[in-house]
Amino acid sequence: MLGSRASRSRQLFSTDGGGTALNRLQALIITSHPGPSLAITALTTLLAAQAAPHGIGPVLTAPSLLAQQLSIGWSNDACDAARDTAAGRADKPIARGDIGVRAVWTAAGIAAAAGLAMAFAIGPRTGVLFALMAVLGWAYNLGLKSSLTSGALYLLGFGLLPAYAASTLPGEPAPHWPITVAAALLGLGAHFANVLPDLAADRAAGVVGLPQRLAAWRGPGAVRAAALILLLAASVVLLVGTTRRWVAIPAVVAALLLAVASMRGTGRVPFLAAIGIAAVDVVLFAAGGEKLA
Image (tube, rainbow, N blue to C red; front, side):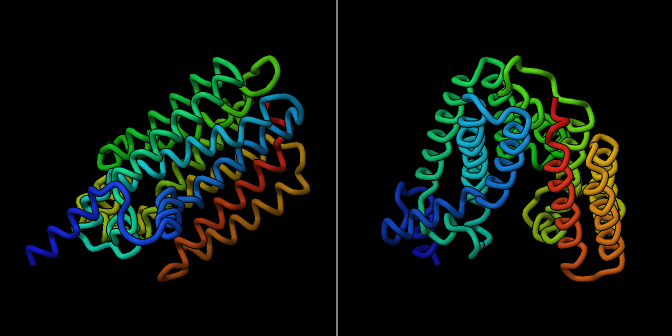
């Protein structure tokens, strides 16, 4: 037992972890949370490119924001490494010993620095917004995920995405309010939806953010209801803010049907339905891209 614990400790704090270089690269990709990182990057880049398809802004928007999101993803798994290892999380590369926590911290730092440099190359306002969004993401990972402020960090982090996209445009215009409000609601709704499958595991691990506290107070159904209300509210705000009603109205109807499925479903259905509504909101963002600023 003691030997096993010592071995896991060496894997956790080693620089390289176990396995081949290809395995470590694969582990590094997994620890970056590539799905959310790519989704957020694509959404923000789409908003910037639709509003102004030429110039340095759209060219550097994607790589700078992707670097930021990778940095946040890597810091998330690095911060949780000890807890994931103690819990024997087989889905976590660091806990499996595929890569060392110091290597992941190094990747997170390099990505943050590279992204910040590219953001300031676009402009001072873009650089400042980049830094603020990165601070919010890292603060969540470093401990605020287990506090009542967890929701506020998602609200602010996603709410700044349209401003970040608009800051890459000529003249650095302010984004239109429906886009900002909808992005904030989408972020907070995604926060509630994201924890739905993991409420029991979070409780066992001592993660007590805003959704987890709501679950402890009113039950898991309250978390599901909050996610649906927030995501549907984002859909409605985007419907109000777009001129492409021929896309927006069917999308909102689809979101309402998914909400019904979520309320009536069991198992993973509520979670998948909530993610479906979030995807509908992304479609609405794309449909209203010309209204960014």
